[in-house]
Figure 1 (cartoon, rainbow, N blue to C red):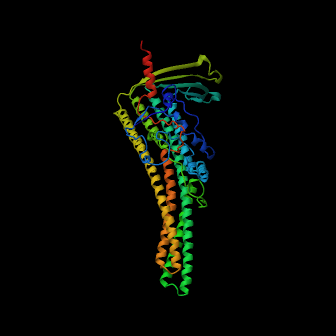
Figure 2 (tube, helix red, strand yellow):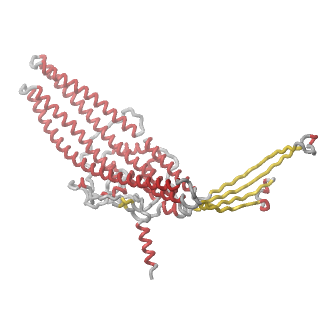
Figure 3 (cartoon, rainbow, N blue to C red):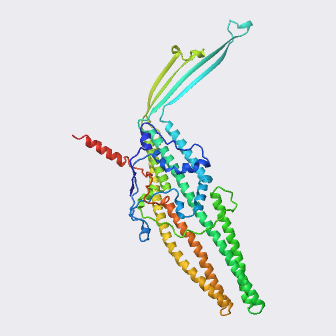
Length: 536
């Protein structure tokens, strides 16, 4: 499989290798809570500032549709484009999730640290690009000197040693410029720009991951709250049964065995309730940390799990490489490694530099710029490395090896992404079926429990049978709550695996996953057209 770019557009590579690197000015210079969300939302739009080398040969055989989705009901027809939505969590149907995710995107410290790393990468790219431009220095000096002449026959004032004092001003302008004939410096700047693109994608990936963690955390908290409420209900149920047994035992209608069994179950229910409280507080603190709050376990969850989730539209798996920001980051680092190879190869060739200086020296400051006292020189130099013990050739080998590592790592990341999508699709379908079966089991166990309790109170059956039906009911309800949460988690995992939401027919944002080709398809077409126009 080969991932291609979208429509032709100006790229950072053309700017960096042409008339000078021009990078997007949309990167914020101050990381603050008030600008973080806006910067995050504009991340992938800045991909035009990353170098574009052509296409990445992944050498993968990819099916036309998701294997796990072949047989699932609903969804769009095969081939429909799955659109990217930044607010994918709204598809879960819980407005509280939207409020919590947006709060986390503003105040989560890890996300703000990732944004700061983007600023650092942007500064590194500026530094790398500065080497391609002329370097100009202006130096102004004022020199005050005192000379003492000892041993001269001419004395100084009042017969003392002869002393002279002088003041001298100098002004010098220096200009140096390395002519980047072999694109060595341009390649280094392009590599730095690719790292900026990787940092932008890292920030988008951190945003996506954080939104997924908050959504999962919220539904985990909802499950923990429901499990706590259920544990309290079970404890109360055991308490009612214990009250009944105690009263019957006091009247001699129940054996001591029944009393001991019910007291043991009541004590166990109290222990389970305490454990459920602890688990709920643990989950609440974890979500509060994601939100940037103090972990006081004060966050409360209420409501129900979404009963119906939007159907999953079908789509071509290859489109995933243009959606997921973590894959965009891996591809940008692959592009950077390719430009590092070009920069290392450029070190093997001669360096052509121009150096010029001009200025003047005078005892009077106002005469510094007089043409009569002005001097200048201009030097052109060519430096060719002859022998450096194999260091330069080894640097090329190292850069090529790093590029090969980056390519294989990118391929592995793409395969892992496909596996995550297939796994999430499988989990979603399987958990939905399990939930239906467990819901049926819960309904039947409720009916059995009701009948068993009535039969026990009438003395038709023994306590052990009634307790067994009660445990079956409790277990099925506990499992049902867990499956409801796991089903929503599977949908969240699918959104994360796809890189966002799906909303056909929204257009997929163009995130160029390109890397090793020396020409883009557009450039090849233009070259062919130019050759054809030259024919008679």
